[in-house]
Length: 506
Ligand SMILES: Cc1ncc(COP(=O)(O)O)c(C=O)c1O
Image 1 (cartoon, rainbow, N blue to C red):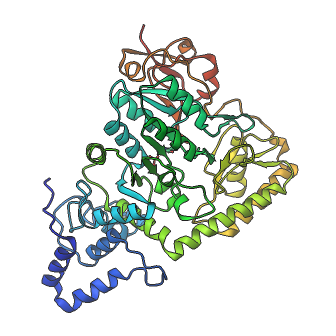
Image 2: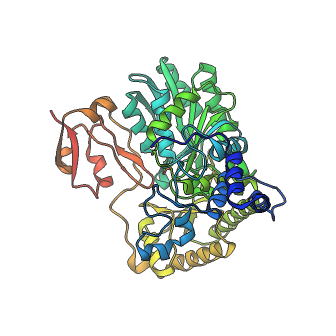
Image 3: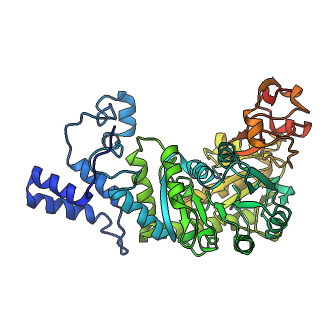
């Protein structure tokens, strides 16, 4: 369906309201909507939220998608669960003068501009389909077939999917390993520089920071190396979207010289699942138009206004007094939890003591005698606690802006009980591994192997063959095997859930 011509959201809204209600009521309406953050000392605007509110308060007869028509035709149990109001505002960018996403117009454009200002970017794009969409767009827009791109091997699968699409060739670098915890650590600037020297035709450096468990690399030094060689530098900061809003958290790559950064606002920033942002840095020469065009191709043509509004709201919240207090509380809660953990014998936490830094709000915990998977099930079944993730080694706790202090007190009390030997009778170490930490043996290019003639073979028969598929489980979406890599016995402990694998036909 063709988009409506959008001349000015506010003028249009006022115009419609004047027709419908008369000037007096319009003025009242506008006043209400503009002052949604009355209680905040810091006034923050949220244009999409305001526009949706206005649309909600001024209903029309609806003869367009979505066909559930403001929830009237939706399964009753679902309507009761989600609530009429949420269904009422479930609309896309074609209606109600809410602006459009591609091209960005009206409140959506304004909200993206406010986000760019808040995050310190030249340009911010709102993403549906998460940071995955951002990584795909960056790869599609900025890399070409055969170009060499330096990427950390523990990158999220969305980056390599992007490289499969574009045909660019990843030059893998492996971060330092934190063996005791079976996790990847930081990436050294020296490793990046050495790899650039070995591959002088490299076109881009693309680094993930922080790791899922919160290990932070020295982005400033890596950016200095990239600038020295005149190579664009992208940072997948999916797990670091709060950093710009609190001085106790690491510095965002946008301030440290990266050209582009993706943020999963839905992970820790307070927006709804699947909503993220992609920022282009102020002084970057990256082609913003190309990125925008790629996003237009990748995005749905029916963007959910609810998700877009949630991004607008999350940014407004983080800038508001209330949001800043919540973030301050999250940092305090994290410090409290860490202090409590230090005092429990047999309980350990991953800390930034060993030449790398960590994000204080991500707490990776292990308990002597228990695998992370077992600890996860004890916490869940016996104490009603759900953690972010569990590996064979430990569990990951996120100290979120939405958690109260009492949540952390409860968690620490439970860990105290667990560590006090009550659970020795079910002592059991996992035979399966969860965090792929293998150095790849590359036999074929990523894209060639992905598009090669394939056959599906039993996992055991795949040893010695070349993988033709991306094997990456979420969380954290880090690849166990990539197309073009040799499959070896070392992969087996990570492949418990797989009976067969796709391999390149010989
Ligand atoms: C480092 C990293 N980048 C990108 C993504 C993709 O994010 P999203 O789930 O927002 O698509 C993830 C998801 O876990 C991730 O861990």
